[in-house]
Image 1 (cartoon, rainbow, N blue to C red):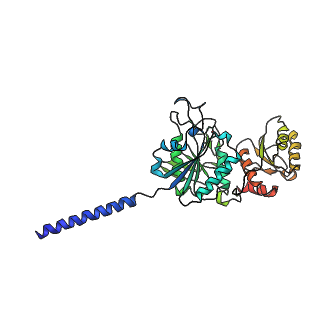
Image 2: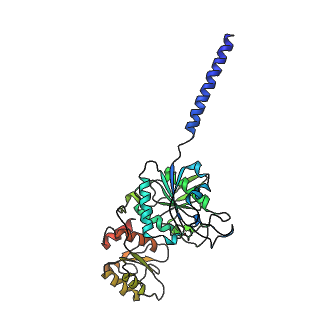
Image 3: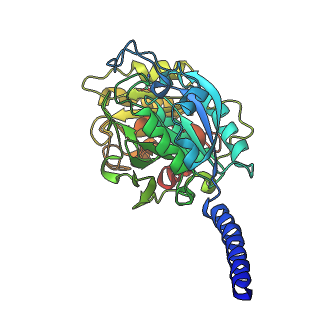
Length: 361
Ligand code: DAS
């Protein structure tokens, strides 16, 4: 009798322990999810086509952020997600004002303890430019990930949902902190500084050329293999907090028999900087040099970049930058050189200082 009672009490105690331990274990087993805010700006990822086979000729920027989130219920498994519709535009219409608004919102959110990371959904056409601008002005080490899609949300095998899932997962990952602004497309992780869109329509349009992307996202995890050695985010000298506008900087494209009137026209329109996207290693056609010299004489900063897309633009290589008082773009493509020059001009007009910045960021 006594033995029976003792056993029953032990079973009762054991059951209670399992219940408590079990529930404690269950609670401790569910890791706290990171808080990720999705800032939506438009683009193909928010686009719709007439049919499921429409992958070109669709309408970008039609689907709202809540619909984007609702379309990927798996997001809830990797982060506590909230969404904000900052703009709803095709990214070819992105402007300096959009960039300032977006960057200021990012900095406000990242300063909040209840925000661990940010994903920005964006059109692919200027995604690399917005990413680099943010790379230079975001003042936090928390992850900021830009994502787009090459197919509209209505298309067969649309890439938007998986790209969005991967981006939120990346923004929620501690490994993504402190690596600068990132771009997550096609299962790959790329740096804002070196990524570029290199194809008009294929899923693998975003590449980092010879400098290489940073890693992959696979099986619900990010895998990093490298990171940029250039300064970014909290390490930069740029602060857009008080800025209401950015200096006008324009790009002239180099080609055989190019017409220097483009330089003159941009200067007449008030440009404070000219990016010369030259042939080869940034060569200057003899007929364009007088216009560039005149621009410099009026106080504009002239940066020699290259249209070729990769490699170092060598200072004093194809032109005597010391003598012309021009700046060499290093490995930045023309559209990114424009962004760095705009921000540089908010700090200085010294070509020596600006050249230092092109070797720093
Ligand atoms: N027009 C393109 C843009 O918004 C669509 C896209 O590729 O996202 O950038």
